[in-house]
Amino acid sequence: MKQVNQNKIFMAVTVFCVTAMLFSSCDFTPPINRKIIDAQNYISDQKYNKAAFLYEDILKSNPGPDLRIKVCYQLGELYSIYLGQYKKAVYYYNEVKDLTEDPLWLIKTEEKLAEINFNYRKDYRDSIKNYTRLSEFTPKLKKYDYFQLQIALSYYYLNDTENAVKQLLKIQSDTNHEFFIRSFYYLGLIYFEKKEYNKALFVWSEYLKRETKKENIVQAKFLVANIYESTENLKMAYDIYYSIADDYPNPKVIENRLTSLYGRRVSRRR
Image (cartoon, rainbow, N blue to C red):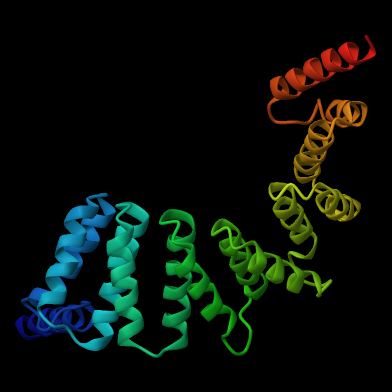
């Protein structure tokens, strides 16, 4: 009986040792794995600065290439998503790119870098580079159409209207492009801001023939009305503003425009 109990104890200890993750022996967790576990616990407790400190400490111990890639990516996530320290996030995402040629890692990090540079750092020159690299992967990535649009918008925000127009026209050459319709809106916006009103009106008329989303239609009609208001076509401006009065997000803005236009039209009659 005593022998049977000893066997049961031995088997239980063996199972524990085999199934325990990140352990180098039955009794002790290696220091690097203990830090990983602690860092993960800090993330669960929303103590992101402490987690980042531990992960950076792990990198100082020169871990193997696979672990280093994962830790650098995790640091990129911590600094971009939770800590808002985008410069550090960019540094660690670029570290991942330097450490591997695995397409999956390269795509993941390039997308992260593109998002940070476009949305947060407003570094549109770098976002063009990021989105261009993503658009050049073979075979084409699932979000290829989105990358093309983001390239066009990056040029737009850089005030490089020539290249922005080129990119938008490239999108419009493919009627199956995911952003074929929306590209007309942005093209019209470029002409609008350059005060090339006839071109803007033409492009937006094409856009409004195709667009089906109410909020986008209202947005475009507001700008069309603005052109007519600016060019003294007061009746047309008034009619368009009135047509979107119930759907515009800020009704007070439309109310003020209608009041102003009505006053101007009355004064003109006098």
